[in-house]
Image (tube, rainbow, N blue to C red; front, side, top):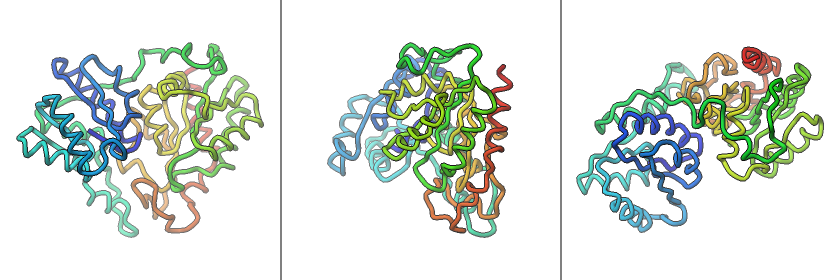
Length: 343
């Protein structure tokens, strides 16, 4: 079970898939927020999904008790808590009292504090959520090797399920996705610099199409303005009805440019190479997308980095130099290297 943000839940997919393939006779139920159904409903024949809204339907202790009764009806033989927060702790307590086999994720907060300390940082690679999730399963008696590749067969998802403006993809075209936004300022590359990335990629190759991803009124307005500047920019924001459609589109991209955000993890689940941009956060915290290369991570070596695990803390310098000082050319160079290797 895991109820957190999209990126954290997306990182469960390679682990759950590997569990399902390794133990085909084990019935697996993933408990998460309803948005995550897309990730798991067709993952493997022995994987089921159960959605639960802890802010409405199962709010408070009364709601958690109702959820526990619903879970009890499934007759689980083991429970894996991939979240380890107050509400999952309560559910875990109930399972423990009823003598279920239960294990939970270990977050190693001490290691994170040393990594993000203001001075005398310990720049040590932290275990990824993939490993931490797998460790939980091992403690329950289900060791695995993570062998996930993609949510879709080789060649990507069915483009016919998308609106006509997104396809078909011609053999000579290069499709590049750009997701220029994130939840926190410490993760967001400045808009004026990101437009320079877009502009340079379009100038580099006349066969490049740029697909711009974003959600929210401000993000959609920015993307709309960018698309007016060049007809080879395609506005994805608000044009797709489901997350499944987004994943289909991402599976046909030759490269994706993303912040340390959910879009990085979504593209990773469909085996699309991602040029990821890191500011306040750092790959050493363990949140690199599944199967992504560190060579494609764009970041600056500053003594204050990383200052935050999730990018939600104010900049210690006050200028977000970790992002503002990244040259657009550096990002473009990495994208061009990826797409050139495919043609």
